[in-house]
Length: 236
Image (tube, rainbow, N blue to C red):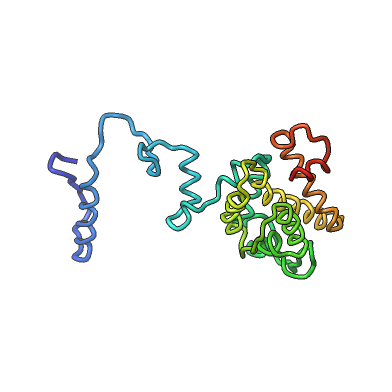
């Protein structure tokens, strides 16, 4: 590079149809100031200071102009549940957990059938929202909350709208934020037991498992001196 700009040397003469392309290349190169004596350093374009961080990497992968302000990250990573559950919720709303729907997209030949109801194909929205067994769990918790709810079509939309539950209840407690995670984790464990071990629990047993799981997660922060699941349910 000379003080006057880039001085490119070509191994052959340019064809007529190549002149415009080389002119465009030179126009692009003119914006680059050239090499310096300082050592080369990597620059992360997603950060204004050029510094890589996991936070900005996460947002760049999970954001776009349409959903940047609507991504329900607080109901995934800020709720008081085990990290593996938060990771699973992230997969569920991205339709990435290994349901029959995902396996078929990967080219695996399988006759899809919901393990929970046996009535429809196992797709993400059916398993986590609209299955008959799933609906029983949602109805139980919505009854406890005293909230009327119309079930959205997809899991991501449900999590986006779930914040409105707290505003309706006008409660400072935040245990209700764990309910979607509690229901989906309970269903996924039950689904895997039926799929891999052939064990089937009754709907009533599944409901009790879900309540017990919520009690286990919330005991330290919300239940205080509550001694039993019965007392905990009464406090809800």
